[in-house]
Image (cartoon, rainbow, N blue to C red; front, side):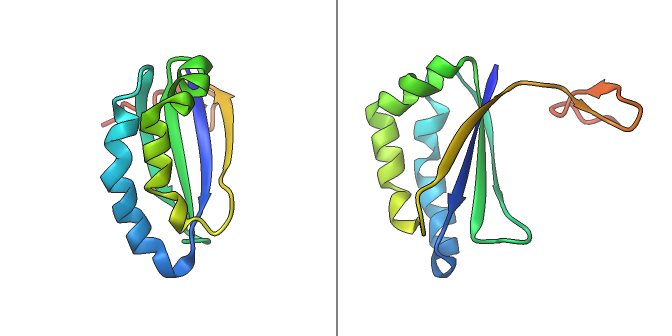
Amino acid sequence: MIYEIAVLPVRSAQIEQFKQAFADVVHLLERAKGYHGHMFAQGVESPETFNLIVRWASLEDHSPGFEASDDHQTFMQGLEEYFSQEPTVYHIQEAAFTHENNQAFDIATPKA
């Protein structure tokens, strides 16, 4: 598994429209081969910056896979008018989160 991290800078006057546009096109991402979930979050200190983190089975599922697809083209066409500048996209390998005594925990399964 790998994570795609996309930093999405949005024009501050269009934040609400961007959120709706994302909701309108996210199904295209969700049906992609190798897709295993995502997190879409607005910045706290910089509310005009959104982070999209997508979990992929492999790098190839994202690039060239999804990126070369018609669904990706439509996905981006639905969002690009709201960007204040070009998004930044990079990938990281999956790793476990740790807490203060360095024990790994599963972020997807909250402890009771």
